[in-house]
Image (cartoon, rainbow, N blue to C red; front, side, top):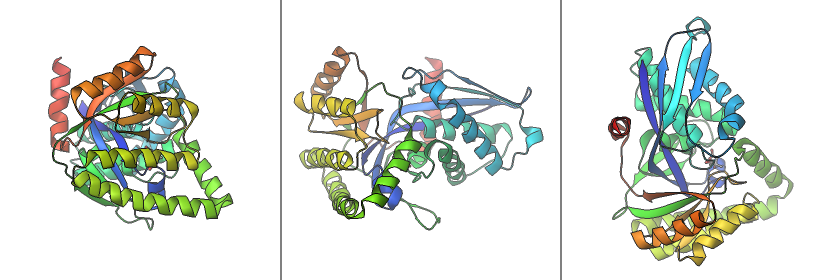
Length: 328
Ligand code: MEV
């Protein structure tokens, strides 16, 4: 049996803009998807035991199948060898926006590689997971699979000519608590990306302006994070949410949670990931503030994750976390 795992993530700055070559800042979170793969049986069977938003697994099933086919193709595993039993689990819930698909693809790619004794480098695993992301996102930037593969806090710039993207590890003074709030809506990332492309084409002046603002905001956000100026980081997160509203990827449920987080004292809040449902992320340094924001949302029936950004976990530790979890 082969086993593997991949990190969940929260994009702090730059989702959607990153698809067009602008930088993005992504933080892996301390929750992982796990996979086990056995090369037996007839065809491919998937048993997906991840806990998630209602309907997540069903809605993603077709894309998941395509993702696995794409990975097998890319790994050169031919159809005779495609008798696989795949199990998916871990403590990363199936919510939209937190990289559940990318984390599962990384986990599956590693598990397949282990089962077939392929001894692949981590860079190669990232490439394979990127191939899988195309099934979920159409034209993904690669930011989600990169966070899922490497962990930590990453400055990411997509290479629009197809070469390797820029992946730079950022470090901040100390980890900061964040709250991820889930609208409960399973979003279609592929549809969201395609809709932005269509609007951008139809309205180039407006979109050029917003994209220029996004670019300087993201560079400023990097400086604010490196200076550990959390108030500035929070303000920029709020502004980033405004730009995402301008390109119409937010929705009333996301705006509601973002406002709720700010009312309860979060120093910044924005949607995270593809939008159109899924999750928001709030910057809530200190246990007390994190609790206040998280419990306010839970009190209204929303599901939340309490986690941190800036934990410098590396992919090697991934397997240690996995072992800890499986012993619980
Ligand atoms: C999704 O988590 C982030 C998007 O920017 C898509 C991508 O970059 O692949 C919406």
